[in-house]
Length: 150
Image (tube, rainbow, N blue to C red):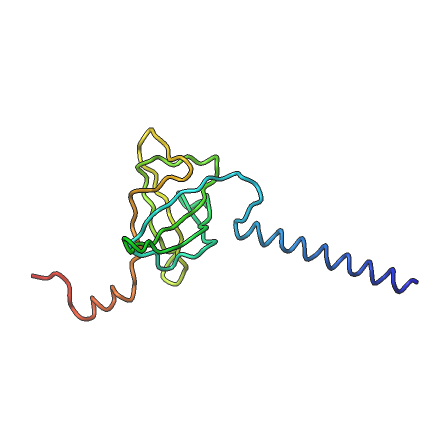
């Protein structure tokens, strides 16, 4: 009887630890159970380096999460869907760009606020975008000398 009780207690501790780990992993990944955010969209010529669950930053502060990446088969652009915290209002003339954390770091979506008095509503599209720049392509152009020297 004592063996069954100790096995049950150990099992309960393992389950509680697993639930705590999943809750922590959800927080770190930016997944939230509440509706404390709104969704925006942006189209890029290249969204290389962005991943679902990646960060959305404004002034270097994480304000959201990338939730979906897909291809628009009509325009051949990458359509990025992301969430922004409800307490952060984004002016309608803001810019979204694929930024890098450094030479060896990953990419994230950076928002640069505009100066408009009108704010984007949930489901709106950020019109001004700048896609990712491939470092390898830049190095290849530099090495081959295919610049615009005249």
